[in-house]
Image 1 (tube, one colour):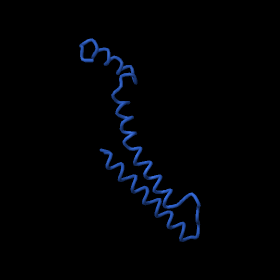
Image 2: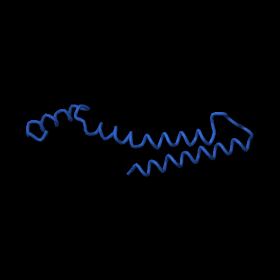
Image 3: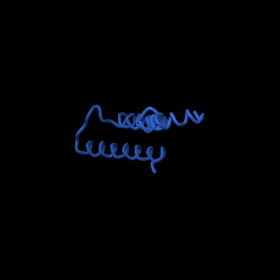
Image 4: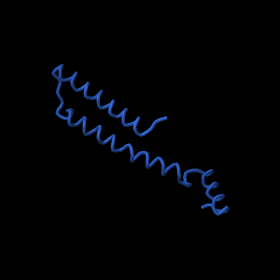
Length: 84
C-alpha cells in the first residue's frame, strides 16, 4: 500500500536520480542554465509539498456523494434512515 511517507521517499529518489543525471551531464561538459542543483531541489520540494494536497483532494473525492449514480442512491438511503 502506498503511504504518504513511501511516496515522499519515491520523490526523494527521483530527485537523487535527477542529481545524478546533472552530474553526468556536467562531466560530459553539457550545462543547462535551468538544470541546476537549486532547480532540482525546488522541483523536489514542490512535489513533496503537493503530496498532502493530493491526498486531501483524493479523500474529498472518495467521500463525496456526487460522483456516481450508486453514490447518489447511497446518499438518499442515508438521508431516509436519518444517518445524514
